[in-house]
Image (cartoon, rainbow, N blue to C red; front, side, top):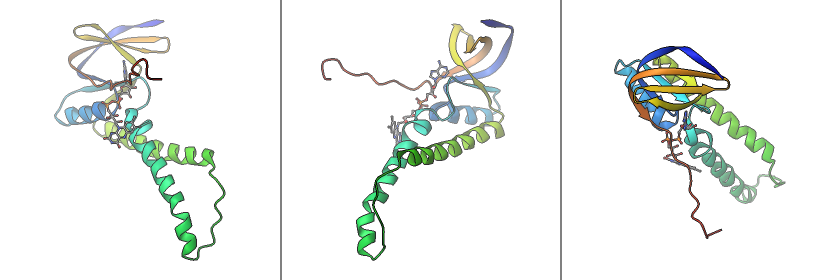
Length: 158
Ligand SMILES: Cc1cc2nc3c(=O)[nH]c(=O)nc-3n(C[C@H](O)[C@H](O)[C@H](O)COP(=O)(O)OP(=O)(O)OC[C@H]3O[C@@H](n4cnc5c(N)ncnc54)[C@H](O)[C@@H]3O)c2cc1C
Protein backbone atom coordinates (compact mmCIF):
# COMPACT_ATOMS: atom_id res chain seq x y z
CA UNK A 1 0.00 0.00 0.00
CA UNK A 2 1.21 3.52 -0.88
CA UNK A 3 0.64 6.02 1.91
CA UNK A 4 0.24 9.61 0.68
CA UNK A 5 3.11 11.83 1.85
CA UNK A 6 1.07 15.05 1.91
CA UNK A 7 -1.70 15.68 4.42
CA UNK A 8 -4.40 17.65 2.63
CA UNK A 9 -6.53 20.16 4.57
CA UNK A 10 -10.29 20.54 4.23
CA UNK A 11 -12.98 22.58 6.03
CA UNK A 12 -15.47 19.72 5.97
CA UNK A 13 -15.19 16.07 5.04
CA UNK A 14 -18.29 13.96 4.61
CA UNK A 15 -18.13 10.19 4.62
CA UNK A 16 -20.83 8.62 2.48
CA UNK A 17 -22.28 9.82 -0.83
CA UNK A 18 -25.90 8.75 -0.28
CA UNK A 19 -28.84 11.16 0.04
CA UNK A 20 -27.66 12.16 3.52
CA UNK A 21 -24.08 12.83 2.45
CA UNK A 22 -24.42 14.47 -0.94
CA UNK A 23 -27.19 16.87 0.10
CA UNK A 24 -25.14 17.94 3.15
CA UNK A 25 -22.08 18.37 0.90
CA UNK A 26 -23.89 20.53 -1.63
CA UNK A 27 -25.51 22.72 1.03
CA UNK A 28 -22.24 23.19 2.95
CA UNK A 29 -20.44 24.13 -0.28
CA UNK A 30 -23.19 26.64 -1.08
CA UNK A 31 -22.56 28.15 2.37
CA UNK A 32 -18.89 28.65 1.47
CA UNK A 33 -17.22 25.58 2.96
CA UNK A 34 -14.44 23.71 1.17
CA UNK A 35 -16.06 20.27 1.08
CA UNK A 36 -14.73 16.81 0.35
CA UNK A 37 -17.22 13.98 -0.08
CA UNK A 38 -15.81 10.47 0.28
CA UNK A 39 -17.68 7.51 -1.20
CA UNK A 40 -16.39 3.96 -1.24
CA UNK A 41 -18.84 2.76 -3.91
CA UNK A 42 -20.85 5.03 -6.22
CA UNK A 43 -22.65 8.32 -5.55
CA UNK A 44 -26.33 8.09 -4.68
CA UNK A 45 -26.07 5.51 -1.92
CA UNK A 46 -28.66 2.82 -1.27
CA UNK A 47 -31.55 5.04 -2.32
CA UNK A 48 -30.43 5.72 -5.86
CA UNK A 49 -28.57 2.49 -6.59
CA UNK A 50 -30.37 -0.28 -4.68
CA UNK A 51 -33.42 1.02 -2.84
CA UNK A 52 -35.88 3.78 -3.69
CA UNK A 53 -35.18 4.13 -7.40
CA UNK A 54 -34.77 0.46 -8.43
CA UNK A 55 -37.85 -0.52 -6.39
CA UNK A 56 -39.90 2.12 -8.24
CA UNK A 57 -38.72 0.66 -11.57
CA UNK A 58 -39.91 -2.80 -10.46
CA UNK A 59 -43.24 -1.34 -9.29
CA UNK A 60 -43.64 0.57 -12.57
CA UNK A 61 -42.99 -2.61 -14.60
CA UNK A 62 -45.49 -4.61 -12.48
CA UNK A 63 -48.14 -1.92 -12.94
CA UNK A 64 -47.62 -1.89 -16.70
CA UNK A 65 -47.91 -5.70 -16.82
CA UNK A 66 -51.16 -5.58 -14.83
CA UNK A 67 -52.60 -3.19 -17.46
CA UNK A 68 -52.21 -5.70 -20.32
CA UNK A 69 -55.58 -7.50 -19.82
CA UNK A 70 -57.39 -4.16 -19.67
CA UNK A 71 -55.60 -2.95 -22.82
CA UNK A 72 -56.80 -6.12 -24.58
CA UNK A 73 -60.38 -5.42 -23.49
CA UNK A 74 -60.00 -2.00 -25.12
CA UNK A 75 -59.20 -3.73 -28.39
CA UNK A 76 -55.41 -3.67 -28.39
CA UNK A 77 -53.91 -6.82 -29.83
CA UNK A 78 -51.23 -7.57 -27.21
CA UNK A 79 -49.48 -10.85 -26.65
CA UNK A 80 -48.38 -11.45 -23.08
CA UNK A 81 -45.17 -13.42 -23.48
CA UNK A 82 -43.36 -13.31 -20.15
CA UNK A 83 -40.67 -10.95 -18.99
CA UNK A 84 -37.19 -10.34 -20.38
CA UNK A 85 -35.40 -9.79 -17.06
CA UNK A 86 -32.23 -8.68 -18.83
CA UNK A 87 -34.07 -5.84 -20.53
CA UNK A 88 -35.74 -4.79 -17.29
CA UNK A 89 -32.35 -4.72 -15.51
CA UNK A 90 -30.87 -2.70 -18.38
CA UNK A 91 -33.74 -0.21 -18.07
CA UNK A 92 -33.14 0.07 -14.30
CA UNK A 93 -29.41 0.63 -14.93
CA UNK A 94 -30.23 3.35 -17.47
CA UNK A 95 -32.45 5.16 -14.93
CA UNK A 96 -29.97 4.91 -12.04
CA UNK A 97 -27.01 5.91 -14.24
CA UNK A 98 -28.85 8.99 -15.47
CA UNK A 99 -29.80 10.03 -11.93
CA UNK A 100 -26.26 9.36 -10.65
CA UNK A 101 -24.88 11.62 -13.39
CA UNK A 102 -27.29 14.28 -12.10
CA UNK A 103 -25.86 13.95 -8.57
CA UNK A 104 -22.30 14.08 -9.96
CA UNK A 105 -23.16 17.21 -11.95
CA UNK A 106 -24.70 18.87 -8.87
CA UNK A 107 -21.58 18.12 -6.81
CA UNK A 108 -19.33 19.43 -9.57
CA UNK A 109 -21.44 22.59 -10.09
CA UNK A 110 -21.16 23.33 -6.37
CA UNK A 111 -17.39 22.65 -6.22
CA UNK A 112 -17.80 19.61 -3.99
CA UNK A 113 -14.70 17.46 -4.31
CA UNK A 114 -15.70 13.80 -4.61
CA UNK A 115 -13.14 11.20 -3.62
CA UNK A 116 -13.52 7.50 -4.29
CA UNK A 117 -12.40 5.28 -1.44
CA UNK A 118 -13.21 3.84 1.97
CA UNK A 119 -12.73 6.34 4.78
CA UNK A 120 -11.58 5.65 8.32
CA UNK A 121 -10.71 8.07 11.10
CA UNK A 122 -7.00 7.98 11.91
CA UNK A 123 -7.24 10.61 14.69
CA UNK A 124 -9.79 13.15 15.93
CA UNK A 125 -9.06 15.51 12.99
CA UNK A 126 -7.72 13.22 10.29
CA UNK A 127 -9.32 10.77 7.91
CA UNK A 128 -7.55 8.14 5.85
CA UNK A 129 -9.00 7.17 2.49
CA UNK A 130 -8.12 3.79 1.04
CA UNK A 131 -8.54 3.20 -2.66
CA UNK A 132 -6.81 0.07 -3.91
CA UNK A 133 -3.16 0.38 -3.00
CA UNK A 134 -3.45 4.12 -2.30
CA UNK A 135 -4.01 5.55 1.19
CA UNK A 136 -4.35 9.35 1.47
CA UNK A 137 -4.80 11.37 4.62
CA UNK A 138 -7.04 14.43 4.94
CA UNK A 139 -7.05 16.81 7.86
CA UNK A 140 -10.41 18.39 8.55
CA UNK A 141 -12.02 21.05 10.72
CA UNK A 142 -15.39 19.31 10.73
CA UNK A 143 -16.67 15.91 9.64
CA UNK A 144 -20.08 14.43 8.92
CA UNK A 145 -20.61 10.68 9.06
CA UNK A 146 -23.35 9.74 6.57
CA UNK A 147 -22.55 6.08 6.06
CA UNK A 148 -26.15 4.84 6.16
CA UNK A 149 -27.09 1.60 7.78
CA UNK A 150 -26.93 -2.13 7.21
CA UNK A 151 -29.72 -4.62 7.85
CA UNK A 152 -29.60 -6.89 10.87
CA UNK A 153 -31.33 -10.26 10.67
CA UNK A 154 -32.61 -11.29 14.09
CA UNK A 155 -31.42 -14.77 14.92
CA UNK A 156 -33.78 -17.73 15.21
CA UNK A 157 -36.31 -16.55 12.62
CA UNK A 158 -34.91 -18.05 9.42
C1 LIG B 1 -35.55 -1.51 -1.13
C2 LIG B 1 -35.52 -0.12 -0.53
C3 LIG B 1 -36.45 0.82 -0.95
C4 LIG B 1 -36.43 2.10 -0.40
N1 LIG B 1 -37.38 3.02 -0.84
C5 LIG B 1 -37.40 4.25 -0.30
C6 LIG B 1 -38.36 5.21 -0.73
O1 LIG B 1 -39.18 4.96 -1.60
N2 LIG B 1 -38.34 6.44 -0.15
C7 LIG B 1 -37.44 6.75 0.82
O2 LIG B 1 -37.49 7.89 1.33
N3 LIG B 1 -36.50 5.86 1.25
C8 LIG B 1 -36.46 4.64 0.72
N4 LIG B 1 -35.52 3.73 1.14
C9 LIG B 1 -34.59 4.15 2.20
C10 LIG B 1 -33.42 4.95 1.62
O3 LIG B 1 -32.72 4.16 0.67
C11 LIG B 1 -32.48 5.35 2.76
O4 LIG B 1 -33.23 6.06 3.73
C12 LIG B 1 -31.37 6.25 2.27
O5 LIG B 1 -30.60 5.61 1.27
C13 LIG B 1 -30.47 6.64 3.45
O6 LIG B 1 -29.51 7.53 2.94
P1 LIG B 1 -28.11 7.70 3.66
O7 LIG B 1 -27.35 8.74 2.88
O8 LIG B 1 -28.31 7.92 5.11
O9 LIG B 1 -27.38 6.28 3.54
P2 LIG B 1 -27.03 5.39 2.28
O10 LIG B 1 -27.95 5.62 1.15
O11 LIG B 1 -26.87 3.99 2.81
O12 LIG B 1 -25.59 5.93 1.84
C14 LIG B 1 -24.45 5.72 2.62
C15 LIG B 1 -23.26 5.73 1.69
O13 LIG B 1 -22.07 5.71 2.49
C16 LIG B 1 -21.11 4.91 1.83
N5 LIG B 1 -20.15 4.48 2.84
C17 LIG B 1 -20.39 3.70 3.93
N6 LIG B 1 -19.27 3.56 4.67
C18 LIG B 1 -18.30 4.27 4.02
C19 LIG B 1 -16.90 4.51 4.29
N7 LIG B 1 -16.29 4.01 5.37
N8 LIG B 1 -16.20 5.29 3.40
C20 LIG B 1 -16.81 5.80 2.30
N9 LIG B 1 -18.12 5.61 2.01
C21 LIG B 1 -18.85 4.85 2.85
C22 LIG B 1 -21.92 3.77 1.20
O14 LIG B 1 -21.21 3.16 0.12
C23 LIG B 1 -23.17 4.52 0.75
O15 LIG B 1 -23.07 4.97 -0.59
C24 LIG B 1 -35.47 2.46 0.60
C25 LIG B 1 -34.52 1.51 1.00
C26 LIG B 1 -34.53 0.24 0.45
C27 LIG B 1 -33.48 -0.76 0.89
